[in-house]
Length: 235
Picture 1 (cartoon, one colour):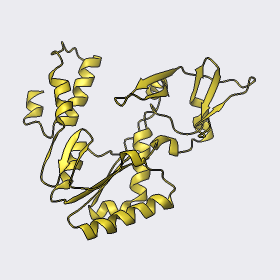
Picture 2 (picture 1 turned 135 degrees about the vertical axis):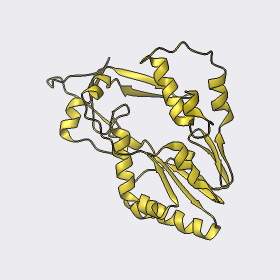
Picture 3 (picture 1 turned 45 degrees about the horizontal axis):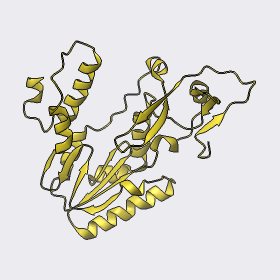
């Protein structure tokens, strides 16, 4: 509430609500989100294109300097319309709360933010030295001088639109990075070993059509079909 993300409803306000879900991330931190699955099934899909991870990372070819930045609490930087607020409420033991900014778990949130980011940096994207994957911003260059120029240009626009960046996740002018589950540099691109090990150590599941396991397997396949030789044939 202090950050302007939620507003507590007063007693005489009526609302259709959803129960919150607690998600724990691999860094030990947790995040509360609403269970918006019912709402998502009724939402028209915004099919604005989001880049494919592997195809995006292949653009690092010949890069000597790589800078990666992440937008801080990306969806919370966007204010909701009044109509949207009516649909986005959660209930907890101490009352009912209404989202004032886009929460996690909304079907079209990634597509919406990808569109916003592409609108902010159209020239940089067309010149081919900037990559944007939702909240992930990457600048890559072959020379130190050009990298500083490009970094300054991007930072100026970030300040102009009042975008918040997570400094803990920023990496400036590296020759190689671990990003989006992949190890990337100007010379190579591969899967991060611990990510691959997590999959290999799991027992082979009995996959049924449309099961949760089959959907998880499909997500893994789409993420790693680039570096995996003959992935489509194997699947």
